[in-house]
Length: 218
Image 1 (tube, helix red, strand yellow):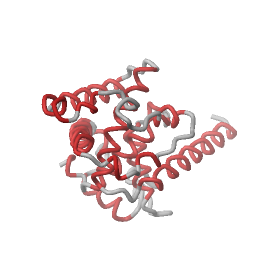
Image 2 (cartoon, rainbow, N blue to C red):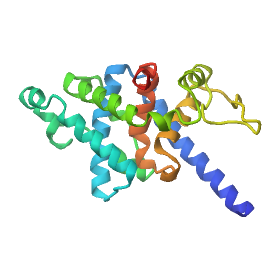
Image 3 (cartoon, rainbow, N blue to C red):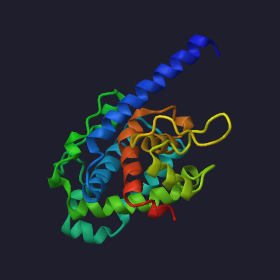
């Protein structure tokens, strides 16, 4: 690869990181319940995007199957007491368009920060999705590292997947965002080339994994 090509890749990665960090700062301080409610919304929104654009690779298929499992869990109960879970987001009075906006580099997560969204019928499905999907992706998340390494990286504010030339953990420029950045990148995967439509939902997954002390990976 030419020097200009490497420079272009570095600039592009920096732009991606900046956009992800902007989203991170919007929601990093949300409490667990509101994050779980937001996850349910983002999962439904991302599935709509995947279907609209006909994305059917292995990652999209695994995500979609977990989404369907989320809707099937306790379905009789939710259909009786909270049928809005099964309505399109707009009809249910919920915000939408996060994945499509992220793909256009203009996502805004502020609509997910309002306390009115923290309801049982959004929290519980979000928890189900978190448990199921993080378990499904456990081998990806912990590839080349241990759960202890992952927890330590979050405590130290560093990217758990970034190593120096000697294979040691890279300790430079530590911040609370660095481990989130690394985990989101691992969840999206190298094959996705940082496809930005994944940013909102994978950011929420990373935040929730940390918020729950990675209990779903044990």
